[in-house]
Structure formats: structure tokens, C-alpha cells
Image 1 (cartoon, rainbow, N blue to C red):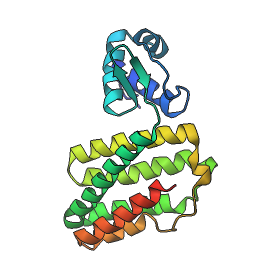
Image 2: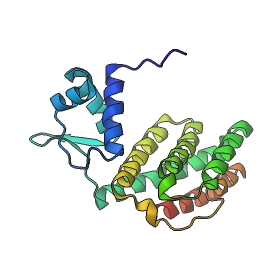
Image 3: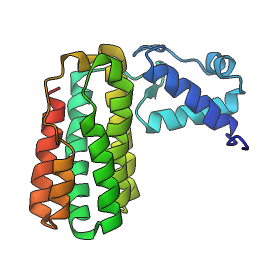
Image 4: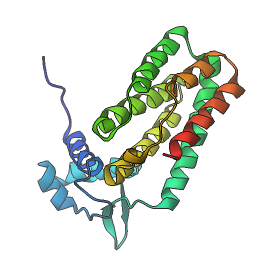
Length: 209
């Protein structure tokens, strides 16, 4: 099987974002273009483009006389992005309540069963977050609104960065065994108000953990 081809920009993005989300590049770390080029094995030009994509996704920030740094973890930024997440997820639920096909609902139920079946623990951290991310991004994708999907992707990357640093999941309280299936069931009713209410409760519960 032929290996998927990736451009120099994609390789640089994957390496740098991976190091940020794995905690190897801590929040506030200064990132020079030359250092990143040496680290990723590509030239400065694709690194510059990769930085633009990292800025778009909220993982790095660049300012005059400040340079490029891994984004800092602040309560203000978290509140801002989580408010965005609640707005995006609730709108996605409203859209899907009237437009999701039976095939899409079944795919969401399958994902919900997978993520709800995993008991949260430090050992399962990566698997839980991968499935959780896939569930919510798939919902956004099914909404047919790319801007909602892009916004949710940015919020989720910031949450992954927080977890890479703090490992707060070790203190996460027990959640309902059907935490994600409730969302799909509410969407399947076709009642936009109910779908939004259940999603809002889901998001607010997740932000307490």
C-alpha cells in the first residue's frame, strides 16, 4: 500500500502540533523559524506556512517584538473558547435535529456507544479524547457547515493542549453511562429545542471536569 504523500508544510505542522499536544513544547515556549526548520527537517518557507496554520488552530501566537510562542494557558482564553464551543455545538445540534439522515444518526450512535463504553482513567486518556473528538467533529461535519467544524476543531485542540499539561482527567468525576448517546437520541427526535438543551447540558457538564 502506497504511503500517503504529505507536503513539507503538512509534515512541519504535524511535527510541531504533535510536540505541542504531547507536552514536549510547553505553553509559552518561543519558536524560531530556523529552530523549527531544523526540528522538522524542512526549509523555513514551509515552516512559515505551518506556523500560519498553527495560529489558525490556536496552538501558537505571533506578535511583533514577541515572536512566535506556544499559546499560553489562561482562564480568560479558556472561557472565551468554551463559550464558542457551547454556541457551536448547540447550533450543530439544532441543524442536525432537522436534517440528519438515518445513516448519519446510526453512525453517531455507533460513535456514542464507543466513547460511552470507555471508563475514563489516566491510562485511557488518549483513546477517550480521540473518540470524543471524533464524535463531536463528526456531528459538526454532518451539519454541512464547514465554519462550525473549523471553529470546533480549534476549541478541541486547545482542550487537548490543556490536558497535555495538566492531566485534569485524573480528577474527572463519574459521568452518565449514556453521556453521548443522550445527545444523539435528542437529535433523533427532530425537536431542535430539545436537541439544543441536551447538547448545552452535555457541554456544560464537560466544562466542569
